[in-house]
Image 1 (cartoon, protein in one colour):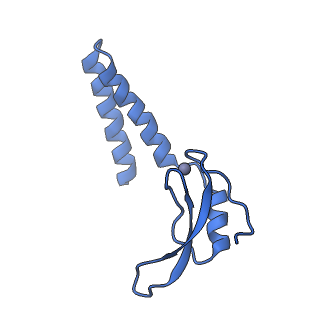
Image 2: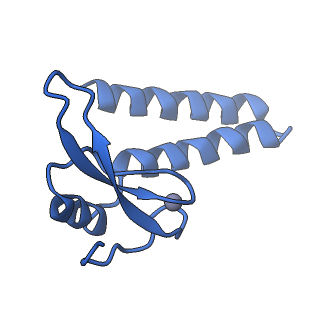
Length: 105
Ligand SMILES: [Zn+2]
């Protein structure tokens, strides 16, 4: 059915497939997404199957997700340790503020 091979999921390593979907827009047109069968992450709506495959296989590392993971680690760390609780929480709050500001620009 699908000629091109989809890489494994960049997030969980699961197997991905191409799915035919409707875009829910006024045109109600049919399109394609590549989606992981395991974790459910997917590409955006694509007009062709080849486009969805290319998009999935060339998926760039997601800057936003990387930053969120780092921030989450700081927050977990700040709540995980009873020592220096105040300064660690303050650092986590400041890091969160910086991140929110960078995405608000
Ligand atoms: Zn996955």
